[in-house]
Image (cartoon, rainbow, N blue to C red; front, side):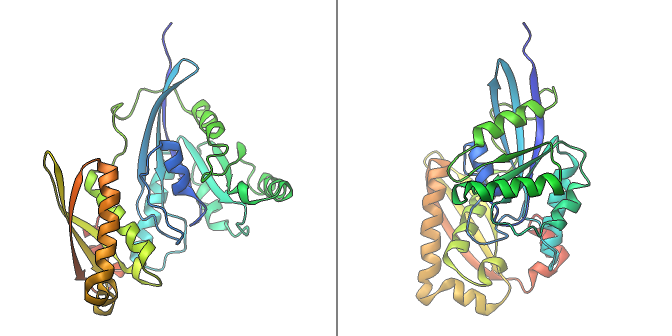
Length: 296
């Protein structure tokens, strides 16, 4: 008997901080998207590829984690929202992730959903922090407002309801050969993940505007048999931000580098040498040419 092969693109969208990246990492089984408690951590469209078999049929799921939907204030934000539009255009299934505490101000997300014909699954996240009554109230609200194909309740952090979500997604996928080689995990190169790991440590170690004003570019990624040498440039918008990033006698950036290197070694399963350079690129978030140079 011939096996059926299903394959498709699944777009994960929603407001900032509802748990999209945590869900993506659970679905893929690898930490591909950086996660912090700060909003707007994800700036790119990151694809995670999952291959498997269910009920005798093979599948390939291509998930897209996208930036949280916001009203753009910078050129950077415009580029981030273009990643969201792109992922909706080629989606075979859309996962709209909201959380139990979202205050129903998601009109901008709902407008974007109108541009996709793909089946829509509404995912209510963080149910481990809610009562049955709160969950029921949320379900009823979304049935009225959006009338999605299905509403699923999960806790991405605790991995509750994720297996059921996976089953639902697979059933909705078209019969199609795989889009990517079966051993490929993501569409992004290794240096992208090295840059993201360093950027994550900046988000977790600094407050206020510093994380949002930083961009990380890996200028060199040299892999030998026993070590990976990574040279990273950290761009900030002002000299005062450079001073904050460095800290007293460079202690703060040294701590960031140590934490990033340890995470890189776990991810790449190899010893890492990391060299960091801090550069000032005035108002880079506002400038289209700079945004493009940084890969947006």
